[in-house]
Image (cartoon, rainbow, N blue to C red; front, top):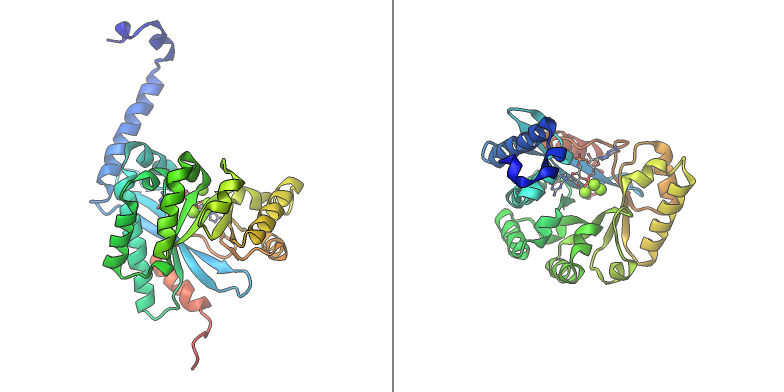
Length: 284
Ligand code: C2E
Ligand code: MG
Ligand code: MG
Ligand code: MG
């Protein structure tokens, strides 16, 4: 009974709130069945070398093609998956599918590239992540050097001591590590020095203003300069224009992703992109 919960409950209660809560519950149940119903799919966005213009990797990005709701972006359901714990089986599915896809591209004779997968904070806290990773690499046959994991500063800083150990173990396996959305989270430069990461991804919010806002330009310049001196590679996210690309190149940025080159696309379209931009690196 609402009455027994106390007066304040009335002030906060509203039919709209209740509707939202039950809507979330329903979405959660649908998400629960999404894996078994094959409703989850991965799109892939190219990572491109500034120097050569070649595709050097792909970032796997999840989408949910819900029977009830149509195509849903991760921004809408990853937080729900994270909260409910569903991110653990979903994340496992993403890792396995992305590794399997990377192997498929290798078997087609396409030049090997690095497959990047996003890890959510909760997956990162999962005790057996190391074993799961090892198992997935063994099952799919992907070499660890061909896998990159993207984690955010906040995921790391939640428990920095255990994160440093975990990242160290993953690094020792040979898997590459990137810090995603760099510059937006709470991070400590002192930790950055200790982390076995090799890539910083400059958040797209800074890239957006790079050629128009002095503050964003200053931030991007500082991040790239710092990365260089720490001998980290820099990937810029969200590059949409030639001006941004040129500016980043001048600053010494190594690689980029963004609509300027390609949106995230289904695997079949990515194969076509790979064939199209693959240079004759192999001797005749
Ligand atoms: P993120 O890892 O930072 O991924 C970059 C996001 O920027 C993607 O959005 C991508 O489609 C979008 N993007 C790429 N280039 C451009 C551009 O030029 N302009 C603009 N405006 N946007 C661009 P998406 O696919 O909606 O994913 C959003 C976030 O959801 C990701 O951010 C990541 O944090 C999370 N996410 C996606 N897939 C997964 C997954 O498999 N597991 C987990 N844990 N999180 C995921
Ligand atoms: Mg990412
Ligand atoms: Mg990002
Ligand atoms: Mg993000």
